[in-house]
Amino acid sequence: MSIQGPRGTLPVILLKEGSTETKGREAQRNNIAAAKIIAEIVRSSLGPRGMDKMLVDSLGDVTITNDGATILKEIDVQHPAAKMLVEISKTTDNEVGDGTTSVVVLAGSLLEFAESLINQDVHPTVIVDGYRKAAKKAKQFLEESADKVSGNDKAILLKIAKTAMQTKLVKKNSGQLADLVIKAVTAVTEKDGTEYKVDEDDIKVEKKAGGSMNDSVLIQGIILDKEVVHGGMPKSIVDAKIALLNNALEISKTETDAKINISNPQQMKSFLDEENRMLKDMVDKVIGSGATVVFCQKGIDDMSQHYLAKAGVLAVRRIKESDLTKLSKATGARIVTNLDDLFEKDLGTAGLVEERKIEEDRWVFVEGCKHPKSVSLLLRGGSQRVVDEVERSVHDAIMVVRDVIQFPSIVAGGGAPETYAATKIRSWAKTLEGREQLAAEKFAEALESIPITLAENAGMDPIDTLATLRSRQIKGEKWTGIDVLKGRVSNMKSSDIIEPLAVKLQVISAAAEAACMIYELMM
Ligand SMILES: Nc1ncnc2c1ncn2[C@@H]1O[C@H](COP(=O)(O)OP(=O)(O)OP(=O)(O)O)[C@@H](O)[C@H]1O
Ligand SMILES: [Mg+2]
Image (cartoon, rainbow, N blue to C red; front, side, top):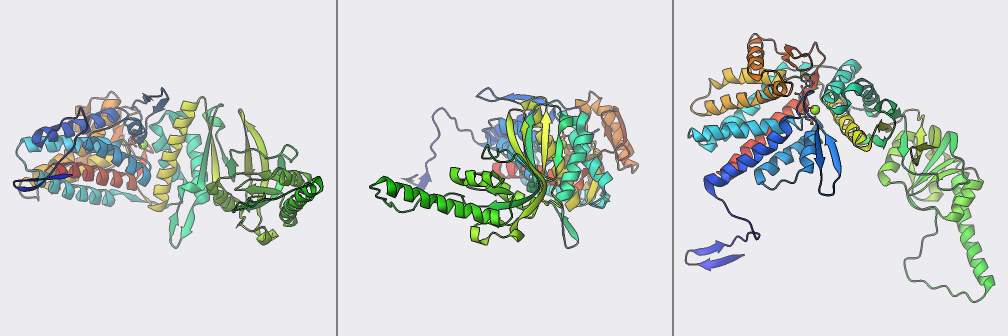
C-alpha cells in the first residue's frame, strides 16, 4: 500500500495490533539481544558435559534433546536476528548434520563482540569486512592444519561417529551404535570416479520404543512398518523372489461416470465373474514371473489377496514410493508399472522376508539381501523420548561419517581447531590496516567461545583453561584441546576425539555469514 504525499509516494507500513515499531540503535540493540538469548539457550548443551534440554510444547508433548537444531526448532522465535540463528542451525544440520549448537554459539559471540566494537565507534561496514576476511582466513588455516585420511579407513570413521555421539544421551552406547552406523554407511557408499558418494536417504531408520539401545540392529535390507495383507498368506519366505509393483492389483474405477445396468441376477453374476477373471489374470501374471513376495505401492483387491494367498505368495500393499525405491536398491528388483512387463529378470532377491512382532506392531523385514544398496537401522530405547534422541544422535553420526567419506579431512575436537585458528588469526590480523584489525581480533576471540563454553559446561575454570590451551597452541601443538571428560588440556587426537573438517568449515562459514548479514541489514 502507498499514499501520495507532498514529497511523492510514501510507503504505508501496517503493523499488527499490539505491535510497536522500533528503529535505529534501539532496534539494533533489541535484535542483537534476542539473538544473544538464542545463543545463551543452546550454550549450556555444548559438549559431552553439556546438559540435555527438556522441552514442552503447547500441546504438552515433551522432547528431551541435546541437539542444537532440535532445541531451536521447538522454540517459537519472532525476532529477525534470532530467526536467522535458528535458520543457520537448521542449514548446518542439512549440510553436515553436526555442529548445530556450535554454529549458534559462535554466531552469538560474533554478534556480541561486534556490538562492543560499535560501542567503540567502529563502523559496521568495517566490522563486516573484517569478519568476512577473518572467516576466510580461519577456514584456510584449518584446511592447512587438517589431516588427510582415507575415506574407507574404518578405524577413523568409528572415532568420528563416536565423537559425534559422545555429546549425547547415547554416549554409553556410542561404541555399539557407531559400529552399526559405519556398517550402514559403508554399505550404501558408491564410488563415483575417484570419489565416494553417500546418500543418507539410502539408510532407512526405524525406531521403536522398548527394549534397550543395545537391542538396536542393522538389517541388510529394508524394514517396512506394514503387515502382510492377508491372514492366509505365509508370514515368512526364505530365499524370496520379490516383485515390486507401482500400480494396484485392483480393477481401476473408470474415470468417466459409467453406469452399468444390471437387470437380473444372472447378469450380476457374470459381471462379478468377469471382474474375478480380470483379477485372477493379474495375479497369474505375478505368479507366472516366479515371484514369491509382492510389494505393491497401491491397493490389493480382496480377491487378488485370496488368489495370492492360495498360491503361497506373501504380499504387502500401500508401500510408500520412497520405500519402493529403497526396496529396489536393496533387493535389485525393478519397479514395474505394467504387469505385462513383469518377468523373472525383474525380480529381486532377499534371504528372508518375514513379518515380525515389534512390541505392539507387526512389521515386515526384508533382510539378508546380497549386496544391498539400501539398508535399515532398527533403533530401540527404553522410552519414546529416549528412542527419539537415539534417532537424532544416529542421524548426526551417519552424517559425520558421510562427511568424512565424501571429504576425507579431519581435525581434532575439544576446541583444538577453534583455538588453533584463533591463534593464527591473531598474528595474521597484524597485517591488516586500520580498524579491520580490531574486527579480525574479535573474530579470533569469538572462535575461542567454543573451548570456553566446553570448559564452563564441564565445570572447569574457563580462564585458566584457555590460558593453558593458548600457550600450548602457540608452541605449535595443534591438536591440543580440552578433554572435558578427563578435565584437562591435552592432545585430543590421541584421545580419539576427532571431527570432520567439513563440519568446522560449515560452522565458521554459516556463523560468520549470519553475523555479517544481521549487521548489514541494520546499517
Ligand atoms: N571428550 C570430549 N572432550 C572435549 N570436547 C569434546 C569431547 N567430545 C566432543 N567434544 C566437543 O564437543 C563439541 C560438540 O558438542 P555438541 O555435539 O554438543 O554440539 P554440536 O556438535 O555443535 O551440535 P549438535 O551436536 O547439537 O548438532 C565439539 O566441539 C567437540 O569437539
Ligand atoms: Mg555434535
